[in-house]
Length: 64
Image 1 (spheres, one colour):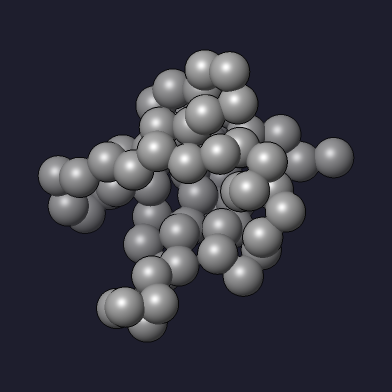
Image 2 (cartoon, helix red, strand yellow; image 1 turned 45 degrees about the horizontal axis):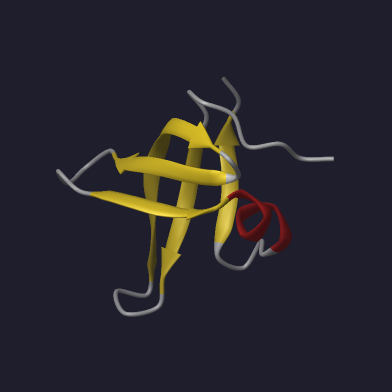
C-alpha cells in the first residue's frame, strides 16, 4: 500500500492549467500533508488518503 512520507516528490494535476506540477512533501501530521511546489513559491495542504486513492490527481514521482 502506498504511504505518503516526508521528503517524497509528487505530481499534482491542475485541471485549470491542464498540467502536472511537482511538489515535495514537507510535513505529514495527523493524515494531513503539506507540499511545497518545486517551480513556484507556493504550498498546498491535502489529505494523505486522497493522495493515495486518486491517481488522476496525484502521482508519486520519487520516494524519500
